[in-house]
Length: 101
Image 1 (cartoon, helix red, strand yellow):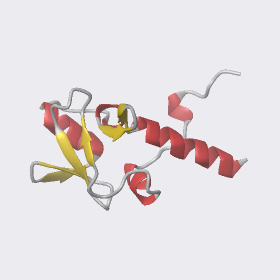
Image 2: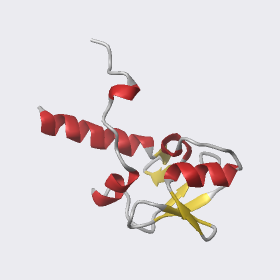
Image 3: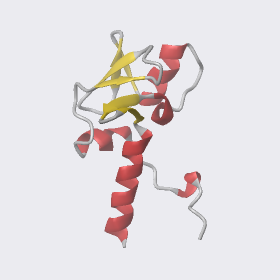
Image 4: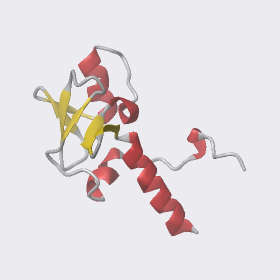
């Protein structure tokens, strides 16, 4: 069977990652090249240089771009190096799928 298309997968809010304890408030996120650093807030927003917003908005602002996919832009420090926060979203989706079956 083919894997489901990304679009058909359940939407996951970044706040869920924090609520489920996969990232703690105060955790630092960075981009793959470690140029930018943002801090995870308890409400699931990111703070970056006194600005606060979604993972997408802060990723776009950091790079000076109109838009950004925050899930693939922001990375967290994991065993063995940086990992995209998208890997945490995948964990939540897998848990949702298990709960639904």
